[in-house]
Length: 167
Image 1 (cartoon, rainbow, N blue to C red):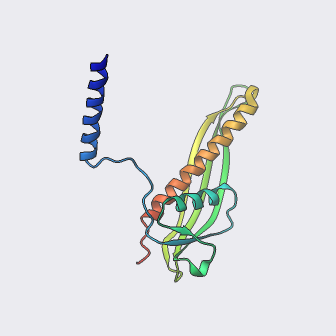
Image 2 (tube, rainbow, N blue to C red):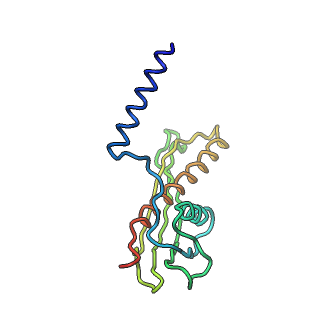
């Protein structure tokens, strides 16, 4: 038994060294190319809070409360949700829905120049529907929308990471 665990440990060490040597690393947040950002716009709810938390977690960028002191301005222009029927049973009852969530934003420099032009991000999910489990399905819908919000924030962060404030 002692020999097997020692072999596993040795094998694990070899794999770890091999992955590290080839440049592999887990995807994490990269620093943003600007020191401060002001978030504004008519979008409310969880998306702006998630965005603020993710930017602050990047470590290099502060979210500040003054537009005039910010190096960049992130304008959250609009956000919306849709729920579309995509499947019906033979008796005409809903069997499947498609959930969509979108976000429109742009990033401006301190001088007002567009660093990222108006961009539309969208994500979709599909789910089956069962009227006999309505409470469970409503909870599933809420979880799907929360997951889509996280995905929109990840998509936006990738675009912010690629922004060039000096141009």
